[in-house]
Image (tube, rainbow, N blue to C red; front, top):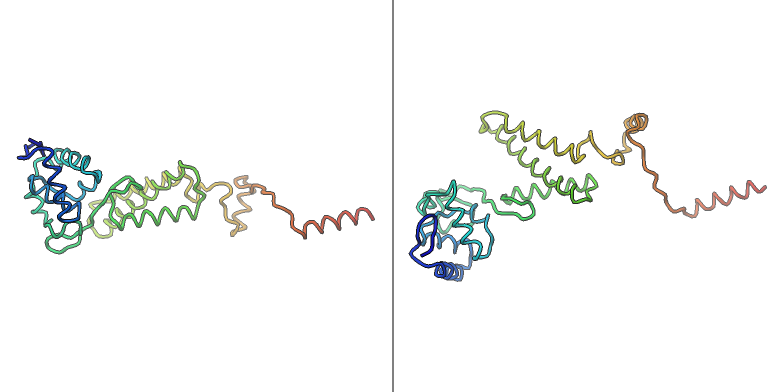
Length: 242
């Protein structure tokens, strides 16, 4: 007998794998195959929980069943999947029984978490923007850039909840904002903590003030002399000789 969600399935462990393989070949869709496996075993099916596990059956099945035995899934059965409005035709499509669109989160190895496609697009665009604005070279800096991107996403989500009136107070937004600011300053991704060579020369007044305060001293970068520079040196030598 195979233990599933604190219950004994009426089939052995090997039969569970064989059944999953048969469903996968029939529907040519691994998530839908796993949905029908859960139906057979009377196990609650959740797309978010499914996406958090590995893609190979040898790790997917035991990992998922272990997760289902823990809070908040413990005690749920397949009827709860139906009650959620997730019918076979809707698996993986991100829509519920009544036709409303829901955001299906999937695991991203790049961002080490569960995100919707829209959230992943935001994270990728924000990280790309940081790379264009700052010199991100070291692994430590890259890690900070990713965390700042995630903090920015969460801060915007909290702000949208404030605008829509779904947030009870500003506590979540304030904490998200403070986290974002702290990460930005730690990584020197804020205007107050830019590197000494990141100051724009567009504002001469600001640059002069920083130079006078000793906060910005441009690093000398030697360049190769061109023909004009060499001619000037030659004329200078001739003039001194005369």
